[in-house]
Length: 109
Image (cartoon, rainbow, N blue to C red; front, side, top):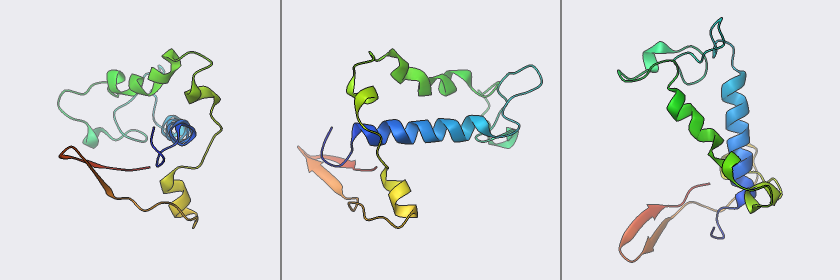
């Protein structure tokens, strides 16, 4: 990680997104299956190849569960991420483009 993004920010942001997405009414049908949509039942957002809430894409949020308990992802203190700071009026580092070896990447978080 660089000085811009902290592991505690990543875990905190992922946890907040997961709680928000899975707590929305209408996410699951009467049998407990995911429904199409981003936050609730929104079939108009689905792509032609999506079915039952794209279980494959949804499962990606659980990838960190494969990390050992002592990994810094789990042990780093929770921290507010940039968007949370911004919306709460807290100072945060300004985004900028990082240029390394002719690669252009945008630094977010």
